[in-house]
Length: 557
Ligand code: ATP
Ligand code: MG
Image (tube, rainbow, N blue to C red; front, top):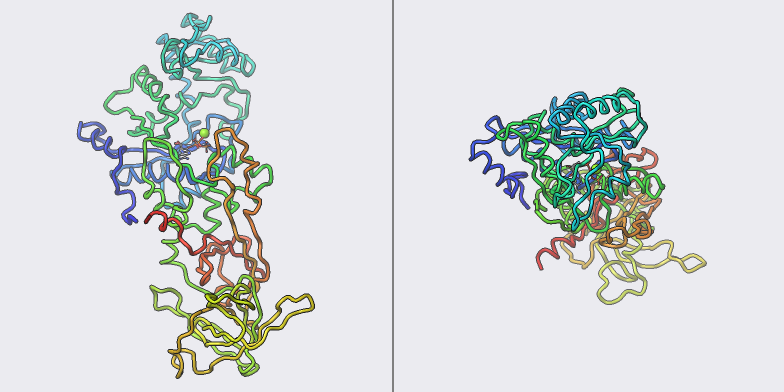
């Protein structure tokens, strides 16, 4: 994996190099991340954030955060706050350059007036349906609006009255006057202002007309002296309009922003649209935007993904010019790589089976030393005693030959401790195994006479009297299908087993009291993260990923 984040080249950086070589943008590179505050950010946005902030960093430039708050109906302050928190957590900083498209409403209005004066915009009374019908298709040119040839004076008057609130929602729009026969439908007299009598979270009731994204975005970019306006592929068709607006409004060709598109990130077994994610939240299918199954940044964070692993992932997948879908196991691979180096290793038994070591002195507790990580000399104490828990699955009464864990009469080593031998199995009335009786070899622990004795299996375990009961949440993918067809019902494809909650799991005491977001490797089990709902008397852990790396395996094939 590349460790020097953002340094890798791609077609966007090549284009920037070209611009710089041609003497453009002499004042430095300036990008922006422009979220619409209508939901929480997801991993796709992380890619865009890494791209924008990473590009600025690579060229010693700047990157702004700009909220594209031109659609007051769907926006909310909660989203504005969460977006800032997520970007900071990912490790990026817009410094003092946080802007809102709504900061420019007055200027945008003036630019619209300017267009009208240039004869390049007109007030249109067609309804939304009529506008659509007049627009034509890919194979047929559109039809000009009957209002297209209003005089400049009439347009100025009507636009002013639109602003003053004289007309109802939808009664009129302002449209750019470009070309109804253009092969690019975006250029067929696009709507640039609409009436919406809606209170805006920042401008209140000052406005009842709001600019369309396609109008607000290029001008906001230009006002902020953005040099490269990096966006996703669906905006490719809008680029001629972006350029038309800036050119018509007289922004200098050598300094005005250049729009460039890259492919959206899609991931297998999940969905990646704020609208759909909101449906999951509102429908109660998940436990909020930060549910650990969600591909949101806050969900990934709560699940235990590290910011570094997400940045590495975004770097690793690179930027492409065509849409594709990335295997989610690659994201898992990235977090595994990070946590392998940074997470302390502890013992936890998820499905406990009691083991009594009959020849171990009653009431005695030993404190063994356990190494925190393979790459660290740090150790912690691990209590050992007469009664311990092992994993239920690590014992089999009728074991096949190749089963190297515990079986009647068989021996295993307890990690960091002794070799034990299974002497007898105790069952309840219904035949269920309730405990095992074992004996231990007192000389088999580190430093003992038989420490070097080899047995095939090594098990994790937790001492009973000091074990802490914990809740462990095991997650599976949100969707059963790896990818969905456009328009198919994703709710029907939700994985009914995406969450499994285990109670009374046994955790070694050293790991039980850590605060939220602490990550551990539970030996032989995977990586786990303390959940935000965790409490001292009821620790809660989220499984981030298991240990088996299916991505590296597939990648090596
Ligand atoms: P969604 O459909 O999920 O709401 P969006 O594109 O409407 O996404 P915005 O808030 O408008 O979301 O996006 C902010 C920036 O993030 C835009 O520049 C957009 O292109 C980019 N972006 C959004 N989704 C992805 C994705 N899946 N991959 C890469 N970039 C993305
Ligand atoms: Mg959007």
